[in-house]
Image (cartoon, rainbow, N blue to C red; front, side):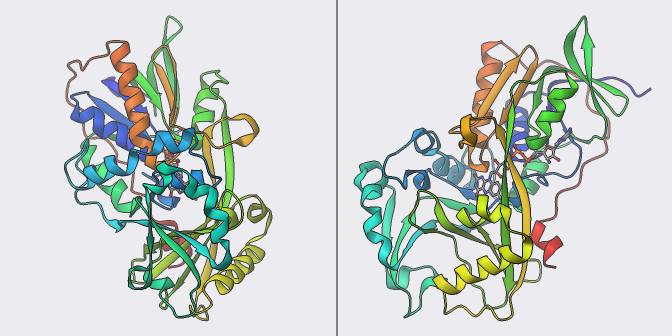
Length: 391
Ligand code: FAD
């Protein structure tokens, strides 16, 4: 039997939510241990597009919603962290783009009237033209309007790597996790036969939360999965592009982000409406054909003849909403020593952590003295999906 370990906060799940929380808690003097059953970032985080939204895309139907208000401060907070001057020191993390763009092809400008009617939106977007256009849109054949959003795009693998560094000795590769109860109360977890006791246990395991809750006999908080069918392509002819292309609806027709592959080429990663319900219903061949058709229609000057293509199916995991709506904020539920959370967006990981700190404060959970941790088996960092699918 391995010796029992004690910590202040035991975190389950090494995606952005768990790793961000872990780093903030350690900085505040709490003892922590983070359990990861697969690879760090390998759930949704490293498969995300890395956009630190300020909420502008949620205002496409002309009004700022709850989502836009809650998320509006995130670009500022992340920028400060990237500058080494914020709540965490993320100064080594690679910034892929200092801005994300909103691009309205050809004739759609009129449809944006409602969008620009909001003063709050006008303050956050800036029209760009000619030489200031993203390189991939700088072609004589380009028609349409482009706006620069105050949003950034991060290289998520380097972000996860930095947060793993900040975790110090507090990461543990875990296979079998079971509840540890005393007098009917959850007091910790039994991990591969070793007892770990904690003042608080936080489940932030993305899609894994449902199973962890079921093992405790809990059905609340309920979780929803929203499936996506993303497309990626790799070609020497691609230059980086970070943009939402507008269609007629309230969601972008296409969201393009670009990610550096290990061989120096760029990967274009395509989401937006293309990857949502109709895209989910298409098989891989039809999804690639649709994506190719979209790019030929929108960016006919880009040579895709040598491009290699792949698709990736991945679910967003979130607290259940009515009619599978998009949740507006990070979400946290509490029950005794157990906290269960979903950030609902990479960008909102700081918001989830704020909510957990507020809960610790409310219940006067303070750092306690614990013996140092022994050397523990460390979970690996996730490899980006494009390195697996388009090596
Ligand atoms: P995850 O990243 O899924 O991490 C959960 C971790 O828990 C995983 O490592 C998993 O292995 C581990 N785990 C699961 N079960 C267990 C267990 N029993 N024991 C131990 N560990 C366990 N958001 C944005 O803000 N901007 C974007 O551009 C963006 N793009 C996206 C694109 C796609 C295709 C998708 C799917 C999502 C996107 N999102 C984006 C949303 C964002 O990726 C997620 O909200 C965020 O990454 C969730 O982080 P998480 O840490 O909660 O979960």
